[in-house]
Length: 325
Image (cartoon, rainbow, N blue to C red; front, side):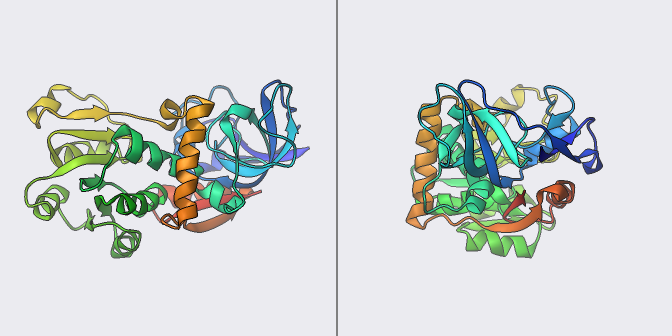
């Protein structure tokens, strides 16, 4: 038997249960991984609360982790038992001692990246990779607005943007988070609890506004984000921390300057093994270069996943959080 977190109904963190399960042997094209560390992400809360429906109940939770290949299914050639690996996609169930998933979603982990770092950063790092290098390919010299700049994704985005020569303006909720974002390479910060975001962006850019806005907050920041853009610029809505954006009249994009909007996801970009490998190579190279440092700021035992999610949801955390089986 092995242990995992599962839930049988949606709701608050108290629906999560620490249970015994029979390990699932890998089918053809699959591998089973003995997790050494598991990543915690906002999307896990979306699934637990029902915003993103689980395929069936009871359901496992989580899509990100790092560990060692424990068993290999038929037809898998790029991985073998004992390989150090990491993953950020696949079926729910990463909150577990053992996790079985398609081998196409698993990549070998370079020796210079430890399990904690990988689990803390795979989903977030690959998210930043597609945001800054694919959704809008930043060349350097652009000015961008990035919400939640001191969080797990934001901390990586600040560093990557600086490495690209991009001026990142980060929104934060406290002076402590502003200091962290600046230390990570943000060009400027805006404390949205005390400052008007649109007015500050206008001041910081001498009225020119931003080439791109990256918004993981959702409902609460939608119109603010649009108002921070130059004409014909791009709004990237990639999360729903405050709830989903709903009931949008597409004409507002015209009214605010013939704007573009996209709603990307990791699965939409890393949709083949080849593209996933390319994105990982780019991300791993940034870590190896020293331009990107992953802040594993919070560690919880896996059985305390509910407490870890509560801390994330209440915005008490900075950096990344991992769960340890």
